[in-house]
Image (cartoon, rainbow over all chains, first blue to last red; front, top):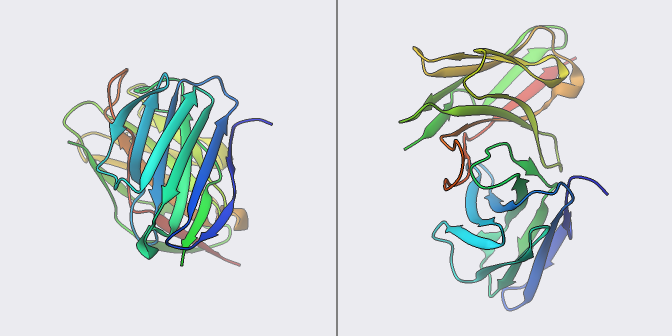
Length: 113
Length: 116
């Protein structure tokens, strides 16, 4: 498989559930990103990891918890979410942070009931 | 600080006619500028990028954009629209030149509709 993959593609969860989103990149990149895409709003950067170290947390609520075990994998752990967290969550990667050409995965469509 | 404004939320053109999607940016430094396209239920795909080389940038699928510093604009054009061009288009600015910067700043998007 090539490029950036994300699983699952669709997720429906209740407010008391715990779930995780997974992102994997096969490009040999060292930086990975989580974005949130809500209807009628610009893409919002959530987290940045560079060489497995978190370098940016864009004031994201603690109910979102990222994890980057290695440069190829990125997770977003979700717990006690709110309905307004329903959105498309996009993962991206780049050669390193600051190399600004980013490659995006197809996203996970999250619905919180 | 950087910002980007896409001047039209929706653009509708007939198949075979020219496309113009407008974008203005604000940046404290020499920016890099991008156009991404997002088809329904898909991730974002890079169309083209400007990184301080030639001001007229050619991208994939016949799209091109011109960087105009005096007008702080980076409009996307295509001479002849195709039905497959129907999608959401995002103008993006970045001041990142290497290391230590945050992610890209996206515009709100322009929905391109192609009429048969």
